[in-house]
Image (cartoon, rainbow, N blue to C red; front, side, top):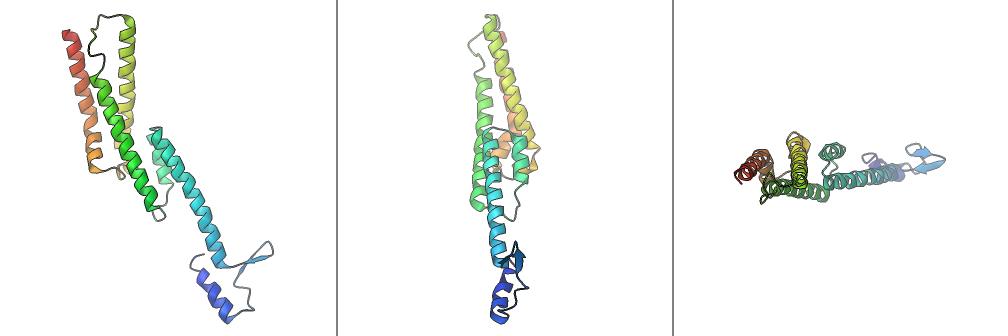
Length: 180
């Protein structure tokens, strides 16, 4: 409709009485320009909802849904401000998740022995399960090309190395606990 909007001006100047080049909708004559503006407004509203959904699922660390939501965005129509915001949010969320996993592994009941009461053992098992869940999230991100293209090189490298680093930290923590 954008390309046809120039016909409106042409028709009005050369053929003021010719209405056939205009579209009639519900007995109202609408110019191509107004159709273009209306379609653009609807498209902008749709993308606003998509961007909002992308930001929400990033905060929830639902990277499966992040991928689906981002794929709904037309690359030709992506707003540069929103693209920058998506990149920043993804980089920050993934970096925080990596740091969280590493810190949880480092401080995994460091000062406790394996022979302490069952509550501590249960807490330790829950901590390890939570670390495993978050590491699985991070491993999935590596396979999502649509997310990877939004990440800066530093975060990509952290992401690639995080599973091994967290595994090493957990091994060292377990070894320390066995020695105590």
